[in-house]
Image 1 (cartoon, rainbow, N blue to C red):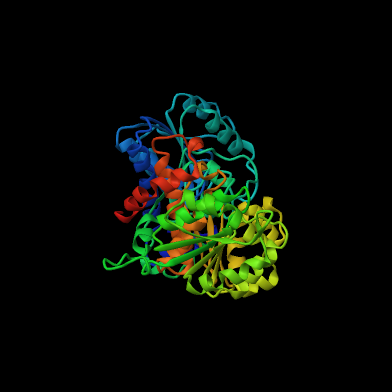
Image 2 (cartoon, rainbow, N blue to C red):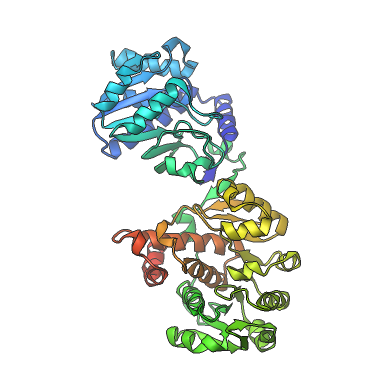
Length: 509
């Protein structure tokens, strides 16, 4: 699924019309998607529609007519005189008025009729403004949005909640707080990036009739992973395979007090299909890991006060040579010369790398150059802030651009954690992960994600696919668990326990 900018959608509209598709047909398709969302969701029979001058208003008026035809009680309002509407929107307004006289009422500055109708409605359709918003709402537009937000009803936004700018996750003022956003043709950044995403409710993409030939001319600003794609790209399990076939993962993780990070990472690598998993950790915690995870091999490395040191490299060389994947960082800490050891390990390793947590803290410009073309980095916004020298507060609303810029400049795969997780690739593509919830907002869930990535790499996926697959499955497991339990009560080991069933569900998609 594509993520496109406002300019790209406008260009598609123009190209479709030039290709002979009437603007009215595109509007009919969009409005039908809105009407079907109302009826399919059983959001009541009393519906208020508010429409602006432009295309979103036309989509909303089409929906109003179709809902009338279906027997619902509809009251529709335009904030301008019908003669002042955009041409195609005016056609839809006149058609509604012709077929269902009295349903449509143009309003001026007196909004009492709108407010009274909202008070008696069960559902409101917001078709005021669309993807062209570039300034805060004011006047009657602001007053109607406030009235819709205050009303006790189900709010459906046409394409984008009125008041949101399309092309980022930023907020420029008040906006409709939608329960459902019916998104036309493709996602826009505001549907996916926070804080704008929090105004959209559930987002449903509906087609409007752009031909495939036009889509082939579009370079999306991002892609959204879908279940079918995930199922198709999971590593193939050969029926005659054995533990060597499915890959060897070496995990360098843990420190005194942080043995759990190593355990979670290793368990996740096993759950995602790795054939052999070896954990290299400080000797002082080796017995804890070996006892907790009998399926993994453990290597006790020399430590100082429970932390890895430069002396750890020599005992690891044989294991490095055999590893198909090296995962570094969960729980290793930052004490002493741990960072120098990590950099030396990176310089010596030849296998694909997954670098997470404190492993990221050890990276300098030289180490980043050494991992180019063979690593997946998995920072959260705070860790990303250190890597690029920008405040963490700026990262969420611009995560698409940040993921793309870093991945291309550093020739690496970047998995930028958050909602949504953004995966940037060296080729300049960005993939946004649609799965996950607050069940993942718990210490240790990132360690599970690192293990998933490593296990999928070991199974034969490429770097970019491993990051996309792991992020999706990690979030899907959280959603799977949340079907019958509270998100606040889910812990990382729950993700591991449910992963076999969650993956099976995705495989069967």
